[in-house]
Length: 261
Image (cartoon, rainbow, N blue to C red; front, side, top):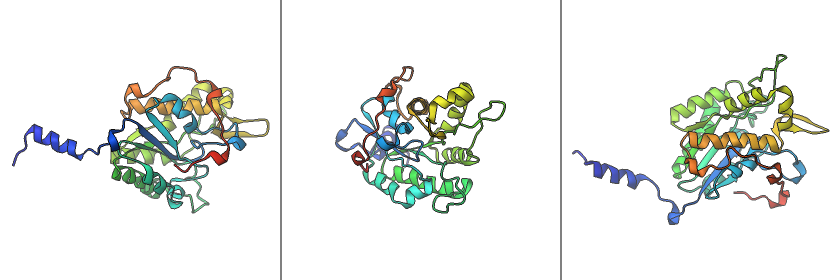
């Protein structure tokens, strides 16, 4: 039996989950590690890029930053943190997943994943979980560390993890935000000395992994630019892409102000 175009269209519309109550707002959940995570007053000036992402989104697109220090794609799941997100996420929301920094720790079996097997297996749990709830999964390759060779060339530090995520995104037809490639190009453009102003370099610490406010804002801008490019959001949903964001907009609340979701 052949179906008319109208019948096919009506069937397709019926399969699309409606937002509860016809709501217009959407939430973008972030599952990730310390490079994205919310930081608190005791950690300032260290800043996760997820803290700056709301500055680039319209108020109708809210951010729930569930990234947390020290987690891998595996430990985040094993601790039940993905379950917490999936209990709260709703049809029409987004789940942005960025891991690799701690997946690389071969000496720690609670966190280590192998790029082409267990890493992809765990990422599929995020993809399948979001889809099962009518939400849209997004994969973001891990932001690069600050590392240069003697000739001033910015060096990749994540081995096969970005390639494994890219391959999985293609296989699963998931939008890919290639933050690894974009951040590596940004660090190359800025150079050895100027990049120090983007990472958590203080009088007592030279941290080439975590960001300060300018660095977090710069990486969040990369993420925000990718959202309309990959057609995750409409261009009108993204704001201030070409504006300077004051670092004074970054705040570090007390840890007691934290919420689960």
